[in-house]
Length: 106
Image (cartoon, rainbow, N blue to C red; front, side, top):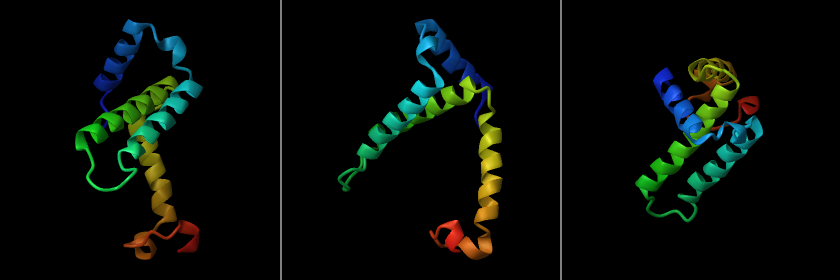
């Protein structure tokens, strides 16, 4: 799971550059979306995918997600596990296994 050492490394990176004032919740959410768009661009035209570029863009998305989690003083592991429980209830194995149908149409 996400380690506190990683979060502290991100905090230090931001502190060293005095970027805290730029990392509002709104700006971090925008950055997540922008970087997710850049990740999607890796797959835009199909064909072969540059795995190194995917890795770089995915790292950017994750970084901004973790910074937003930290901004709200949340526990990334906890919120993912809590959401997984909600999703488990929406998509029981006996109805959803092997299907991509939306939960309200199962």
